[in-house]
Length: 502
Image 1: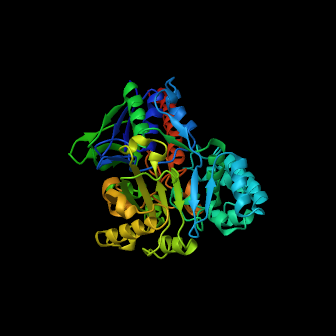
Image 2: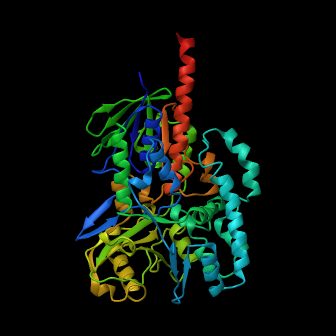
Image 3: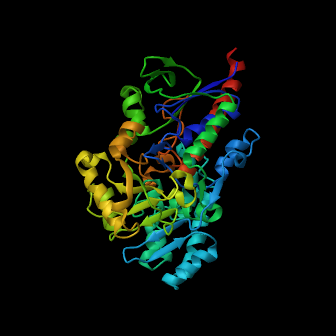
C-alpha cells in the first residue's frame, strides 16, 4: 500500500511539495482555502485589467524547470520565461535613475555614470555575494536544519562569511555612493526584512540574480500557477479548493487527523503545511501539545513588514516606464526604521512599481497599461486603522507618481483598488498581516527559523516563507526540497523498522 501525503496550502512551496512527494510515489492531496490555487499568487481581473496579486519576479528559473523535469517534461513547453532588461530601474528623488541588470558590463557602465570609483567595489561585492551564494544557497538552502548539530557544523563557514554583519554593512564595505548603496541593499525587502537588520547571508540574492537573470512569466505569475496545476493534475494529484483547515488533531508525536472548517476530517501518513507557522501554532494546534521550543519561537519571533498594494489601470500607456521600477523616497534608513522598529505609517514612502504591460500587453486593453504599486508598511501590530488610512495613503501615492514617474496619472487612472495588511491577515491567514511571516534576522535563520520538520511531531512538515530557507520564490520552492528529503528519510526509516516489528 502506497504512502499518502496531505498538503495544506497551495502557494509555490505547497505546489512544489505536492509535486516532489508525488514523484516519490506518494498519493498526494492538495487543499486550498481560496477559490483557486497559488496562495498569494492570485490573479485579479478588475475593470478590464489583469493584475498578479502576489510575486511578480522570476529568479532561479531552474527551480521551476526541476519540477517539470521530475516527470520528464520541459517547462518551456508549458510556460515562457522572458528575460527582462533592465531587471530593475531605480528612480531617485532628484530625478536620476540607475538601470540594474543585463550583462556585468551593462551594470558597470551604469555605475561609471553615477560614481566611477565604485566600479572596483562592485566587482568585489559580486565576488563576496558569490562566496555567500556558494555556501548559503548551493550548500545550505536544501539542507534540513531541524537538528542543532547541523547548525553547529555550519558555524565556522557562517562566521567566515561574516553572517553576523547586516546586508547594509556588507554593501557599505564595497560601495561608497549613497544611491548605489541603496540600490544594492534593497534585496532583503524582497524577503521581508530591512537591510539594516537582515543577516548578510541574504546578500546571496545579488549573485543569484547575476547568475541566472530576472524573468517574467508570460501571461503572468497566474499563468505559471496554471501550468503547474495542469502538471499536478496530469500526475494524479488531487486538488481541492474552498477547503479551509480548522484544526490539526495530534496524538503523542503524530498528527492523526486534519479537521476542516466543514467538520470533515482528513487523514494522511504525512502532513505538509504551506502557510504561516505563526498562524499554525496559534490557531490550528492545541497549545498544550506544542513543545516549549515551538511556543518560544511562536511567541517571540519578530515579524516581517506589512505590505500595501495598489492596483490600477491607465487609459494611456507609459512606454518610458520599465517593467520593474523601484521608486525611492526622500528617506531610506529613517523610513525603514519607521516601518520595522517604530511601527509608524509615515507620510513618505518608497515604492515598487510593476508595469507588466511593458512585456505582456495582454494585461490591459489596447492603448492602456496595468500597474501594481507596492509600499512596505507596518504590520497589524502597529494598530493602524486601514479603513481610515488606506484612502489617504492611496491619494499620497497617486499624487507622488503623478508628479514624477507617471505624469497626469490622476487624470488617467482607471479601476483602482488596494490590499492592506488586513487583507493579508484575512485572506492568507498571515499573523498580524505580515507580508513574509517572520523577518530574516540571523537569529531567525536556519536552525533558529521554524523547522521544516515540526518540533514534536514526526509526520508534520513545514514549507513556505516562515520556515527554512526563507521567503521569496527561490526560498519557498527550496523548502519543498527539504520536505521531500525529510519525508523520504522518514519512509526509509519506517520501512527499515517494519521487519523488526513483525
